[in-house]
Image (cartoon, rainbow, N blue to C red):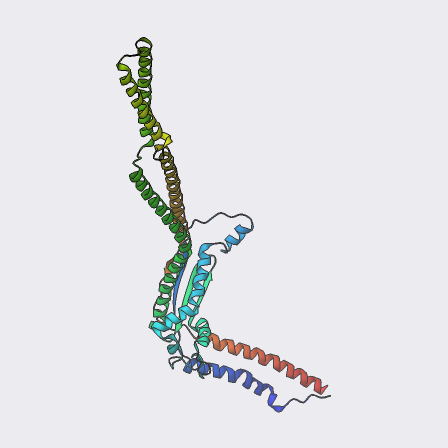
Length: 372
């Protein structure tokens, strides 16, 4: 079976359609239609306050490529943020980026949704990540490069400068959120324990005012000493009474001694009741006061422990802080960097020429086979 090759596919015409026309159209577009694009670039490093820990084995290998470095993790957080819808909407609110990139400032091919098929923010989000803001991270140096493309050099510079400011605010908010939960928990624990101490101190003051008990040990000691002296006086009076009764039962001093003995016993009983016997005795108050003092000491230790935990949480939060160090500030470009006209024209020509060469060999082989 012979394969017929249309006259259209001669080598010369094939070269015209595959090489000349695509190269000419590409050159015409790049030289006369394509909008020059300015790129403003900034370079930052996300650093951590925490000292770099030592690792061994697999952890050491991961650390060597930056996987375990807090700065690398923070850099990826920032990268995700600047490509996020939140960052896009914040830029759009201040600089109307959607309106800018769908305007006639850019040529038809570089413009956002030139046919107005889907001008939604959902679609613009993809355009924003692909054509407006790009970023890449060097894991060896931890340098994060942010690039902004625009048809106006001042506009590109303003967007790049704003993105750096937004990144700083994002890192600060990230620091605040990361430490807020732990700090608030320990702060609340500290406040609760302080309130307990304050309330218990107030209860002790009210108890002392109500009972009159200030120093149970001193009060009990004074009452005991008084009771001992009364006991000694009672024994002396009783001995004296017995001696008088045995010698002179009708002595008029006997009723006086008996009255003195009765008064001494009454005073002794009063002291004993004060110590432990009656409802208003000092013993229950002393026990209650000691319990209150013990509870106060425990609460004070709780305050000290919570305060130490709060200080430790503060220190840990500080050690986990991230901050941005600017390596290269955004700049106003003095010349457009895109499109790379010569590079693109040469690439199109090279690909077209290679394709033409392959098809030429294929057609020549078919002709040779047909002739055979």
